[in-house]
Length: 265
Image 1 (cartoon, rainbow, N blue to C red):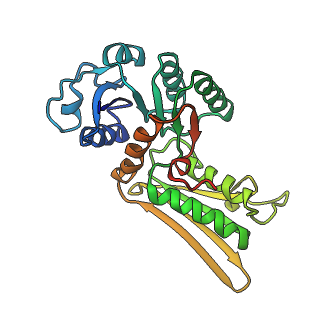
Image 2 (image 1 turned 30 degrees about the horizontal axis):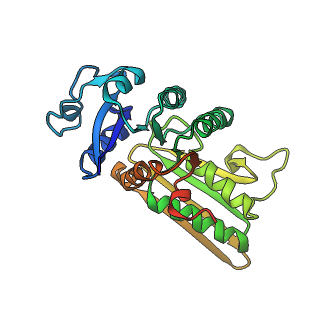
């Protein structure tokens, strides 16, 4: 069976380098392209500490697609770049897996619609850590029975968006199951966090953190806390590898890794 040909955008970034390593380690995948605005002309293997791979970092998606002919593009960049990268991937018949967060809802809807019309598999996930996806699923169950809750998300100080995509996705899932936070008053202090879908989210950005989230549910005489901690970026790679395999069999895009894990019901 032919290997899945994978191209990584944002390949020289911290997440991109982990994706390069993960893809290179899979027996059923072949790394064929790397895109980044930095490191152009460098061998991506050397950038990632893998030694020469014979794959040069290119500055644009179009150049990489033309030379590498990938089956799947994996994107970990920034919101504006990710939207443009997915657009070019769809235009060239390339499936896509995106972990970049912060894209406006309207942009996501447009990309999903284009991919659906093209019959191309794709995945946008706020979090690729399997444990984080399970945490979100468990929160959805808990909200049915203990609806009063709040979310605390903690990330490294270089994270650009706040709240995190995971926190907003969790709030939406919890709200859909009846979860909520105490209604806000007109004079509510900022320390009470910001409400998303009626669920309060508190964001922390500090050195030393990677990606962490705790959802606290309160009930009569009891508290339930559901927490997930990613202690290193390698924690996201099993989910990325799963997504690359699964999108090959999709004829349209999905939002959330839970859809590929059978947890969306």
